[in-house]
Image (cartoon, rainbow, N blue to C red):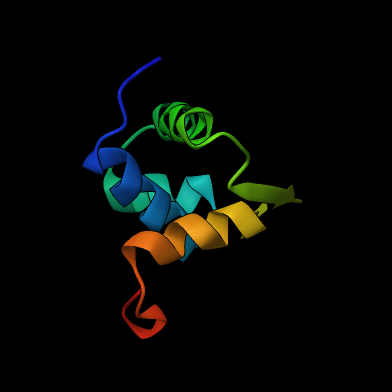
Length: 78
């Protein structure tokens, strides 16, 4: 398993802010497949799904909200 690093946290934050892999990949200037793989690595390292997929939108799961809150306690700044 790949080691978790700050890049994974940043990618997770951007995906949660943008609400989709496609939009986040544009912001980050990465291929959607690359970003999706990084998200899968992060989800494996935290032990669960961080997003539920509804049509083409990603919604934070309870675990996702918990993880986002750990590194971004001030929701207004996120």
